[in-house]
Amino acid sequence: MRESLRGLLSFAAIVLVLLAALKLLNWAPTALDPGGMREYPSLSAATAALQVEDLLVPSYFPEQVRWPPRSILAQSKPYPVLAVAYAGTRRDGVVLHTTQAASAEFALESSIALTTVREIVPYDLNGRQATLAVGLCSDGEPCSRLTWQQGRYWMKIEMVSSPFELIRIAESMRP
Image (cartoon, rainbow, N blue to C red):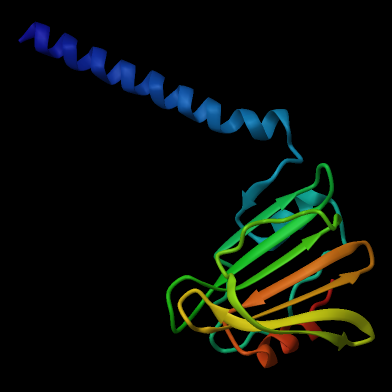
């Protein structure tokens, strides 16, 4: 009886030490590199961590996009990035993905991918020169992507939808 209790206590101690080590390993990257890419619980937490005030977020969301965002990724080093994914109300998975980066080279793999591009056209987005791509996602659903430069940021919005809703979202983006 005493040996089984000792074995159980030893096992519990090992599990606690292992959990503490895993917690430390999870905490270390953010403590050592506080500006690196990480997930945030809200847009306000992400913008506060980035310490920038000119990040753009949509003020219009179509009915098929669920609020709050499904995931919010951001970094401040080596340059600010805000990537937000929104789930759908009528289908599983991400239906809207917005990315804002202070570098043209930044690329974050999105779960929305135009596998068949039907048309790429220049588009005048409230006086800004944008590029609109329209096609199909891997599941055959209509997909659209809009990219443009706004100030020091390169913007990319992707949506599982026709381009009309995507354009309305892009036109609604405000700091």
